[in-house]
Image (cartoon, rainbow over all chains, first blue to last red; front, side):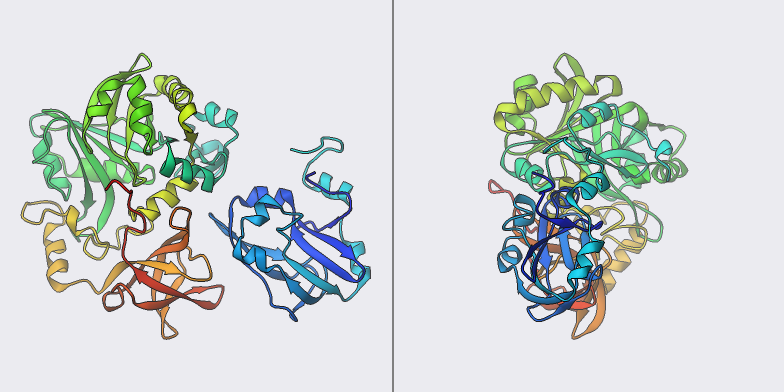
Length: 133
Length: 364
């Protein structure tokens, strides 16, 4: 599944999974495919504050560095240590072990500014029902 | 540059069918990757990779004076080349800085080929023409010549099945042979740090040889390889890239290419290079291992917080498993073991000067 149904998306190709007032953040399958092999991930420490649509860190592929923009505002409650040690998880499991941050949401209303799976699919030019890749 | 202006190699349709990501490079639309840079890199180190390098330039020189003329143009010992041998060297200007790095192949007693970087074809042609005597015929065959490289520990096996003669070709040797019924010039040269071959042939024959090599090499794990992995492979092996480590503002001494300069012969730039050698370089190319970030071309190198140099190339090296870089640093900081910083996103990330090449193939 390249665009899971249970997530919200940003136009900058990040995803959010909501669990109570905690949001798990990662980058999409489409994003990791565009980046190529990810070799380095730089993330804010626990306790840091991230702001919606502001840079939260950097993912570097073999070829280039790319900013990651936070899809929500809030306080970082956990960063994925496993993905810092094994950046290739971003490629192999972008919606699973390759997640980046968990953030305590500052404002649930911000979720309204994110895309539904359907809207994200059309944003990346995937027609509905075309399925996986 | 607009896409319309880009040249396409004779293998463009093959790249598209293989799902390559195409990018503009030196005026050409070239594959940067197919299956992924790391997978392609590993294929070359462990089995074999196939490269379309048709964008590169091929110059041909002939006539009684060709050898002597090239010996004056190129920094290395071209006069000493036997027929069937090739040598790496530099084109330099009177100031002793680097116009291009090239390989010169002696393909017949009075017939030479020079392979130049795609980005420098027009400049090099003008440079060469300005310094040739009338008894040397010069032709730029770049647009008519395709170049396919097969590189990796299985390269000799795979190409040898189609062209047995190449098995006995020594390193930096060149010969005429037939591959899949097509006449080609094959050299045992490359830019990856592995054993391998570069195959020169007319554009019209490129697709046939490309297809035959992919097919023959399939059981061995051959992969088509794009410019992305070509760069990580050459960087692990510490090969200079024109425009990064070397250009017309760098001299061979500071670039670590003194070994390519035969200073006891007469060649363009020799006096200036000899003077630079006697004076000793103020800066040098150093190999860095960066701990906590990927250094990139243009990043500042720091020492005690002060900017002292600049990264020329940097990447993650898939085989060495580290973030590696080449950088110009003051000569006294180029010693192995020196701790420096690389300024990545406004932070000085620790780096250590290490011995190069970062990678050396096991049988060497």
